[in-house]
Image 1: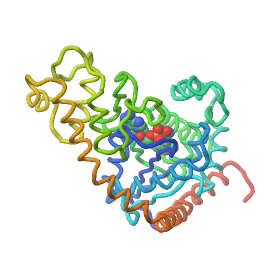
Image 2: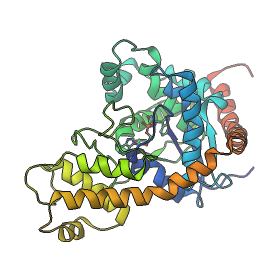
Image 3: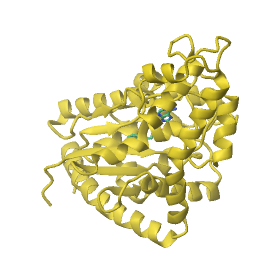
Length: 331
Ligand code: TYM
C-alpha cells in the first residue's frame, strides 16, 4: 500500500466521562485532518489502567469514547478508529522504548508528579513509564502530527527526544513528530477552580462540563461557575474565571474577545453565564444525539473497532519489523 499522505495520530483515555476540555482542546479538531492526512485515532485503554479502573466501566467507556469520536465528526471510512489494546504492538514498542527512556526524564514529567500525588496509594510502574508508551503510540505509525491540548506538550517533547535518540543510535527509524496544539482552546479550565485544568477525573461535578451533560446540567454548571467581584466581562490574566468562560463562548460562537466584551458591556455575569451555557449546550446537542444513535448499535461499533485495529496493525507491523531488525532481534 502506497502511503504518501502525512500521518496524524492522537488518543484519548477512556478513564472518565469526556469533558468540553477534551472536546475543544482535542477531539473537535481531529476531523479537520481526515481529508488530507492518513489519520489514526485511538482509544488508549492501556494508558487508562495506570489508574485503577472498575472493569465494567472501563469496557463501557471504551465503547463510549469510540462512539464520541464518531459523534464528533470522525467518519470511520476516512479515519482509522481503534482501541489500543487490540494492537499488541503498542505494548511491544512501549517496552522497547522503556529501554531508551531515562529515569531522570520520566521523573521530570509533571503529569506523573500530579497523578502520583493524587493516587498516593497506587504509584505503580506503569504510571511512571506512561510517557514511553505514549511515545510508542505515536512512533509506531511514523506520525508527523499529533493534535493534543497543551497539557500533553511535555509528553510529546519526550516522544520527540526518544525518536531522535533511537535514530541517532540505529539510523533513521522513526519520524520525529510535531504537536498540533490549538492556541485558542489548548487549556479549558475548571469552572470551580479556574486556575487548574478542567479534568475528567475531577471529583467535583460542578467543576466539569461533560460532553454528554443534559442542557439543564450545562446551564446549571455555568451558572455556578466561579468568576470574580468586578462584574465586567473582560479578558485578562487576572480574571481567570471570566477569561475561561469567554474562551468557551468564543469556541462555540466564533466571536472574538473584543466582540464578546462589547456584547456584554454593561450586563452582569448572570446574563453572560447563561449565554455561555446556552451556546455550549446547543453546540453539543448534535453530538449528544449522534452519540445516542451510535451507542444503540454496539455491533456496528465492534465492527469499526475490528476494522480499525486490522488497519492499524498493518502499519504497526511495518514499523515493528524495522525496529526488531535494527535492535538485533532474530526475526
Ligand atoms: P487525555 O485522555 O487526558 O485527554 C485527551 C485529549 O484532551 C486534551 N485535554 C484538554 N484540552 C484542553 N483543555 C483541557 N482542559 C483538556 N483536558 C484534556 C488532552 O490534551 C488530550 O489531547 N496522554 C493522553 C492520551 C494519549 C495520547 C497518546 C495523546 C496516549 N497516547 C498519543 C496523543 C498521542 C491523555 O492522557 O489524554
